[in-house]
Length: 318
Image 1 (cartoon, helix red, strand yellow):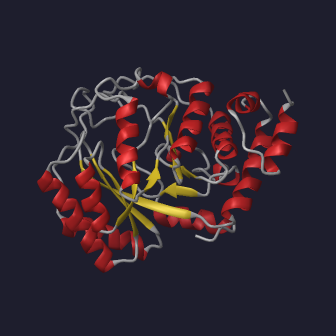
Image 2: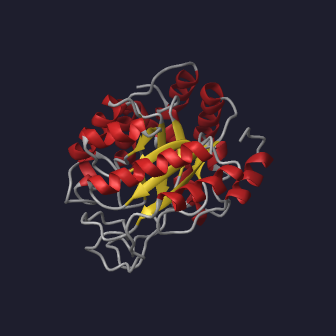
């Protein structure tokens, strides 16, 4: 087996990493990994940076038991709960994001799936946003039906977000109310309806480095175009409330590995980025050239204005 330095040289020359090679790289020098990931980002993505904002369009009362999530009704996190918000309000939030320079906007809802009336509301909101902005639209609505995907596609939504969260091996320790294969089937339905896929996971839930690597390969296998990397925010009332925070160097190493494994996929910094001392700056020089900006679902994020200032300072084309 080649040493890590030889593997990285081969990757920079177009070699597609396999799992054994990725495991060899897991303990390589972090600076070397970051440098390689950044050069791959420049090679495949040039110097463009994509900002995405999300709206928590339906909050709380979720029947699922995902241990990281404050919106589950099985936990005692005390998150704000409300039904699906009005399409006009969603469009107003989208307009504000577009005016500040955001390119992509995602409608996110809690729960396993939406009922037909809720689905129509999502489509009405998407149509209104399309009329009032030039934003590219995403939706994150759980385990949707095939008909729901077709309706959203007709409404102008072009990308579906559905995180795999972690490796297949570790998933059962994080969620028991739906299976890994349920997520994969939902993703396949969305792809069959012509959607791009945004799918990633959360690090810091107690998973191993091997789990993170397996997640990255699963994302590559399903053909995702965007891979969000969330950093666990331990929320009081959830089963992971006492989980110790990851060291920033470990986060940086993980981001770089995700890009080295998936050089043609956009690696997107997502939830938990605000916990980093530099708000993700080092990650944007280690292979990530996309981020969710503004507030997350149940936690605060980095403001759009702050992100744009930082990215311009890094000479990115936002």
